[in-house]
Each structure stands twice: as C-alpha cells, then as structure tokens.
Amino acid sequence: MQTGLEEQLGLYQKRIPIFTRSVKGRFRRFKTTVLLLAYAIYFLLPWLPWSRLDAPSQAVLFDLPGRRFLIFGLTVYPQDVVWLALLLFIAAILLFFVTGLVGRAFCGYFCFQTLWTDFFIWIEHKIQGERPARVRLYRQPWNREKLLKVGGTHVLWVLASFWTGMTFVAYYAYAPQLVLDFFTGQAAAAAYITVSILTISTYAAAGLMREQICTYVCPYGRFQSVMYEPETLAVHYDARRGEGAHGRASARTGQRTLDERHEKGLGDCVDCGLCVQVCPTGIDIRDGLQYKCISCGLCIDACNTIMDSFGFPQGLIRYDSEQNLAAPEPTAPRVEWKRLKTIGYGAALILMSAYLAYSIGTRGSYDRAVNQIRQPLYVVLSNGDIRNRYQVRITNKAAQDQTYEISASGIPAGALDLGNFREITIKPGHSGLVQASVRLAPELAEHTHHFELVITPKGKPSEARSEIVRFDSPKEAHD
Image (cartoon, rainbow, N blue to C red; front, side, top):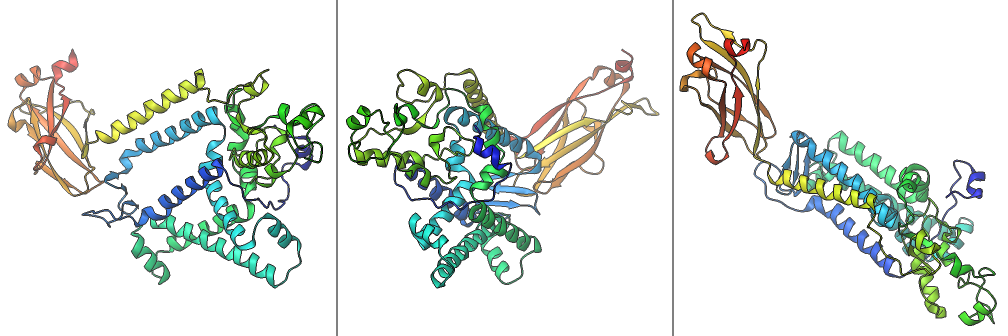
C-alpha cells in the first residue's frame, strides 16, 4: 500500500499545501450533516439546562471536585469505572466492526480531525475563494490583498480554536459562570492553561498540519490494513473500466462519447484530475488503495459529476470491495457481513452494549460490601461467648446525603454490636465504613453458620438489601 515515490521521500515529508476544490454530491451532503450534528452536540451541550438540587443546572457536567460525572439524569462516580472500561471496549469493537465492513468510514466522517479540518477549509474557502483563487493567492507575492485574506483566515482559525478549547472547559464547570470568570480574570489557572493548550493544538492540527496528522501522527491509518479483508468496502477506482486497453485520456474531439473511446481502446476516465483536487489528503485514488485515503467519498462525488456531464455511467470511483472488482463480471457493491470475524465483532458489540445498558438500568442508589475480619476468625470471650468481627462498607450513589440503618436477621436482636450507633450518614459519591461484631453464646454459635446483615436507607424500606455473612466458631474451625 506504499508507493515507490513515498519510499524515496522517507519517513517524513515537508508539507505541501493542499487546496481542495468544493464539490457537491451525496457524500458531501452526508459529511456536512455529520459535521453540523457533531458541532451542535459539542458546542451546545454545556449550555443545555437540567434541573438539579445539589449541582449547577447543567445537563452534562464533569464535577471533578465532587468526584462525579453528571450526565442528564445519571450520576457517575469513580466506583463506576467498569462503565468506562465497557465504553472503551465498545468503542474499540465498533471501530473494528465498521472498518471490517466499510473501511475507514470513521476517519472520513466522524473523526475530530476530519470535522475540524473540514470546518477550517470552509473558512478558508469563504475568505480566499475557490481553489483557483486560493492557488493564485498562495503564489502571488505578499501585498495588501494577501495580507488581509490570509491574515483574516488565520484570525478566524484562532477564534474557532479558542472557542473549541473554551467549550471543552465548559464541561467541567457551570458554563455561564465559567465564561464570565474567564473573561474577568477570576477563573482557575487550570482553565487558562487548558484553553491555551487546546487553542494551540486545534489551530496547529486543523489549520497548519491537517492531513499530516492522519499521515504521521494518527496510528489508525497504519494498522487499518490488518482489519481489511477482500470483502471490505472501500473507496476504489475501477481501473479496468477507467483505463481500458490503452489507458485514460482527456475528452478531445473524436473521443468524447463512450463509443468513440471504446473503439480506440480508451477507458472511461477523462483524466480531469478533479478526484485529486477534492481530496483532503491530496492523493490520487487512481493509484490504488493507499493508507492516506480516509474514505470520505468526495472523489466519488467529483467523478460522478464528471460522468454525468459526459453522459457516462456513474461509479467509475465507488465504494466497492477488492473481491468484487477482481471478479470477471463485477456485481453491484454491497456490504458483506456474513463473515466469521464480522459476526464475532457484531456479537461482542451487542453483548457488551446490552450489559452496559443493563448495568446502568439496574444500578441501585448505593453499593454495599461486608467483609469478615479473618485474623483471627473468632475470639472466645472470658464467659465462653464467641465473637466474630466484620467491616461494612456502604457507598452512596444517590444525588443527596443518605442515612443507612444496619440490622441483622437470623441471630438474636442484641447479638449485633455496632458501637454507639446503628445508622450512618454518607455524602453523595462517598463511602462509609462501619465496624461491626456479632457475639453469640457457645450453644447458639455451634448451630449458627450464617446470618444476614440488612442495610436499609432511612425512609426507603423498599431499597433494603441484605448480605449473607458467615459466622465462625471453634467447633466449625476444628471440623
């Protein structure tokens, strides 16, 4: 997948500016729709109100001082780290699953680098004009026009980068107050540092480096080939149709129609170069599948536009599989999902997503754990009574302070000793530890192997939970 030219250039090549041409088509419309939706979610979500009793009225708030994430009606605490692990697993499997089916669709439509680069190119186009005007501006010496247009472009890039960083920080504090504090110099130092770093990195990645992030920084483009299979759909140039017997050629007089071209052994490609001009990474898809291709489909839109203008069939460049292109009679491209690897990814994705949804849906307002202190297993008191000791840990996952009552079932009422209290009040997201002991007479201890510790949120008897606890005695230890 690496050409001889790329091998000669070495591991790193100085960036050559790419001036992309605007194009219309279904893939361009889809990219624009994804961009607008992603930006609406990212930039507007911190400003979405959500009524809360113990926190700012913000729909999504990562409350680091309170050690919790507030996501609409869900409160996530550090104890829920398993959810994060599941999310990361689901994201990885989803990436493998999608790549196995349709190649680098994530890169072409959903990657942050793609979304911000697309927006920065749009700004550049609005200020400097279409591709020919931008190329002319780049080549001309510095004058008033170039200074205003290039300077204005970079100013808007910096502003967009700044608001990107500002929005990111707004997820970690009450957005309206944060913005006010930020511009009045009263925000925390971490806010200024974070916004500065994100402003610089966004400006550099989306404005200055662009495709070099995909080529040299992002590892996905390098290892994506291990997830490709002959049945994987990717952006391909139909070389058999486009080249014909004697290669591609421009549409001059005598070779404008399909009949004229086929009679001379020419392919359907009119060598207009539009597929290269619209590519955000600057590659020529006609050279074959390349790791720099992000499968955005813009070259498909460009080629279909040219095919329509000449009255040729669309699909000279299209999403297709290597297997289908190599067939004697290629069929219409389709997603081939009936493969062991793809089915395995899909099954893992469904199972893990279902488990995550079940875990979130069934989570109670608190967690509890009872551990027996096993050194020693038991203590024989001076009057012969047997005592076992336990640690009861309760974690409050509710959004407000909660008081918990602790009782026992299966042993006499006075056998459970919790010191001077039988209840504990715990703040949201915090844990409380209660030392408990159970003391039984020798005759009763001999026949008591287990009992239940019952934890009940005060005023909420329906949420009472019990833990079966072991009780050790000398006879049982000897047996």
